[in-house]
Image (cartoon, rainbow over all chains, first blue to last red; front, side, top):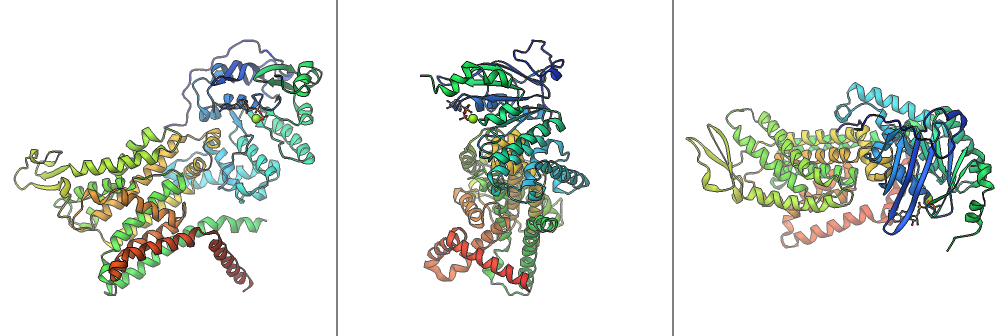
Length: 283
Length: 353
Ligand SMILES: Nc1ncnc2c1ncn2[C@@H]1O[C@H](COP(=O)(O)OP(=O)(O)OP(=O)(O)O)[C@@H](O)[C@H]1O
Ligand SMILES: [Mg+2]
């Protein structure tokens, strides 16, 4: 069983994206693009006909009322669910035959709305699990403690601390992940996702449960992460100040349908969006 | 903070070190007592089985405690290892004169066959998400029992012959039957020793501890803690489930071979569902993922019935009471809290000193 992904050669599909991506990314094809993406759960259409394109270094937002289908979009992009309809192109490659593991190796990493850490393991081990596919030694080298084990573990240890230092968490390295306070657990999930060296980072409500000062710090850190790692970020968030402040493009879902796409200004003045948020649920 | 890190880092390795130390000390003490003839004959005869069951408990703890999957048929792997090892040892009787060498080869063969069985069981089941392993291993244990109960193996100058029908094996001159279906292997040459059992336990501990504290072991524990998160960071679920389960099966096979080669006769129905559950009891009592716990539970509960022979009629009653007490001691929150408080106090006074 090898760790390489079996897939067809890269197909670049020169279809113009249906939403604007930032100027600086415009001359390159989007890091992720999905077309007519949809999924049904029995009779319920949770996501329908979603078209989305994310620029290579864009910070994009996915918003919408509760139950709009935002988390479901993440689950589709990461293949936790197989889409009923539509295509997902990751860096120009169709992901239809990939599973969650392969999608991660191809470049998408995520956090979860209801935190999913390896809670019995240490903080450092959680990050090292993010580094899993970048640590190069196998089972036998581990059991017999061959030189490869020591070399790679040392490298992984140093890299893990370096990544933890993004959120100033290096001193928590030995704490049990499950014992961290809520906010720290959310930050650790981001670090773990970053450790996999993604091209696109999906954050599902990263500011949930954080106080305003923590949220402000998180905002800065998301921008910092994008700038230092040079990656794209797609985030789901109910905190509008965060979304409007750092997102360059926003997509609004309601009942699985895309009701608006645009820049923060465009979204803020869109009557459909205002109706969805203020008018309550359409019956 | 730096200092603190160092201390914490050594915590796992300290537990591992103490586990090795415990096994070594127990071996040295028991072995010298045995050599001096100070052991009761009942206990003397239990030394090899204790080692086999300790290894079994450690092996199962890898599946249950580290991987987080339930196996209800680990006696099946023990059985495969027992018969493969015993047949191999018997077939090699003349070719390999040195008993320790023959034993070592038999253990490796037992482990290899059990690993193969582990692969066969694991491939269809471990791809699925859900608690299917328990059901399938349960069935596996029963199937293996039936297969071996109906298997006849003989050896002659031309090599090994196997059949499911007794009379179809035509052995040449000087040929002999090794395995005779429900009669099992009647004349096992006892070559297992306490020292060999001790070495097997140590090897098992090294394999498990080093696996757990490596890249692969982290991946295995990640699957236990949160499968979806593990997939989301690019961990190949089937690969690491197989790795843990097959390693566990192989160790169980080696334990089976050690056990078989310490008995006079060996029959398939010995390795039944009750046996699988007994081993599971060792793991649960000792604590999931806690290797030293498995060692103590397996050793204590293997010796206990023998030592309780004096109580004759009350034997099973006392056994049950001891089981309940151990369960209370290890799992009752009040008692646990009490012991933890005690441990903290001891630590404090140590620091003060
Ligand atoms: N596995 C599933 N089976 C059936 N229905 C599902 C499943 N997952 C999600 N749904 C339904 O799909 C709809 C969208 O859910 P989703 O979790 O994506 O919403 P959301 O936009 O993330 O909401 P929130 O803001 O509350 O997190 C909901 O009606 C939900 O009940
Ligand atoms: Mg959600």
